Image 1 (cartoon, rainbow, N blue to C red):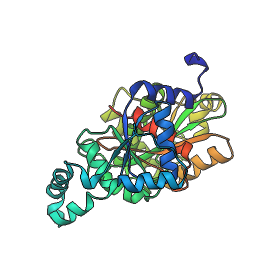
Image 2: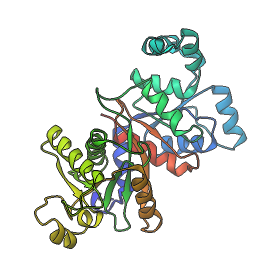
Image 3: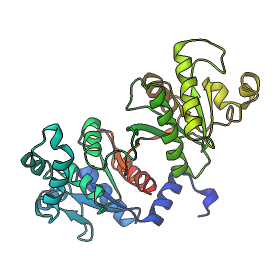
Image 4: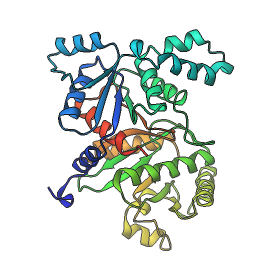
Length: 331
């Protein structure tokens, strides 16, 4: 099948299969994860690494009629020669916060924590969890293992939205930071632009959204967006970004020509940065449920290495697709 005829999801799967990244799956007794691992392995999308007690994993597979090939890697934290080394790393990083070595050792028996220390130490390329863990648990483990990518970074999220016509746009932040300040908003914009580039290979064009377009309204919330844009341009002067823009001005060329005729982004944006979590979460769900878009995410960003979160209501297909997405975020 030619590249031009691939759907965005098919393209993501194909690109992931070329990369061949190892993705740690720590919820390995969950039937959805087991089925996803079998599919990922059979179709060579990524190399799945199931993490947990091997006897329990194989018992779960048998009880759920999942034929688990011996060629799928299973890593048991209790038997792994690096577990105590990983625990020592966690202890050194967190002892100032009161963590004891005994507690660190106990934490490294848990598959989620072990998966992220495998990632930290280069034994895998990414981690995907959330089918049985909360978002808070996934993020906390990620922060205390792989950490953020650079000083001043923080964890945020975005969604890749695939519209019915196949167009791909990115929304951020829709799941993590409720009311970002101007510094956080600029960071969300920069990270969302990079995520969009990695997942679509498109040049990002970033619109910082507001209820105002280019000074049409005066309000402290408008000023916050304006200040965030200034910080973003200072940090990344070559990134195509503009704001503040209302969504219609950012999305529709005919509206952009009237409201922001001098903008290089208005009417052409493919990355949309919402001013707060209320707007972002509502916006992506309207786009998905009313607009008929496919929403991929939440995709976590700002971490030193890719760790992604799943909804606890996710399907096997969601795990397969997010495994592929995670692999595309690997450096």
